[in-house]
Image 1 (cartoon, helix red, strand yellow):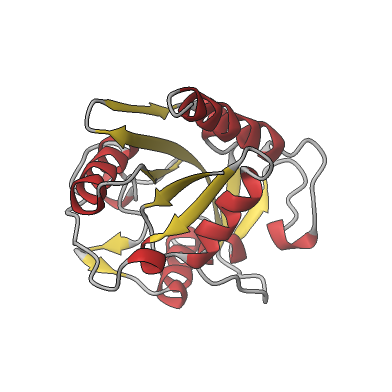
Image 2 (cartoon, rainbow, N blue to C red):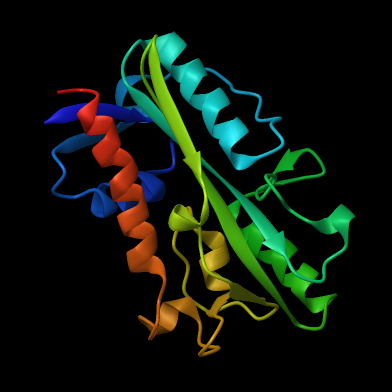
Length: 205
């Protein structure tokens, strides 16, 4: 079993990644599992991949063990440039929002744009294996399909994934929490992440 640090304190994200990579022989630990004094990383990159790299390299420098970090950008159709979240999905006007504040913010954004907006996540992952070996990827294989953000939140919440309460499947128009959707892209995204980590395993044999 290969141990690798996931550069996040978000328990929901850690569990989600463990589920996606189940069976690959990888043990994923989070920052809170190895350290209480977690170094701050300034995520000022212009793309998800740049921010993922910054986090992975900082945590590798601090802890000296194989580490990976992920980052996402949220992009919305028909929304003004100065209101686009981009890589600042949770940070608004320089402040980190709580889960409920995120729901309120994006609900209001949808309301001001006709009640619903179409968006997608551009995802990136960066792995730092040792001082000489690292690689990263950002692209459609690990990114989301288009989905709808509604002004009306579903009544269910999952800690760490607040926008799922506002999200609807693009084709069926049903909320994510109403169950699996026909033609769901998630299986393809899971396989995309698994391909990235199979590459990681090649470098650790």
